[in-house]
Image (tube, rainbow, N blue to C red):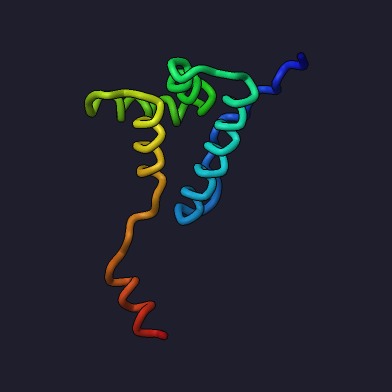
Length: 99
């Protein structure tokens, strides 16, 4: 069996409004990497922290301090929430008034 190439670390580029899409794309590649390497659920959380790079590792550690359970799914959901843009009701109302 051929070896699976390593996944590049997650790097945020561009404006904050694009971070959620960048994160989703990287997580999709990570999930494909897990499938290709047949990685079991117990090793997915440490691999996310390792493959994500220094910034993701630091964010992941801060999420872990918020309390259990610290599973792969909970970590992925917490990190996804961090990259989602915050809603600005005033701006949304302004956009709605322009229609």
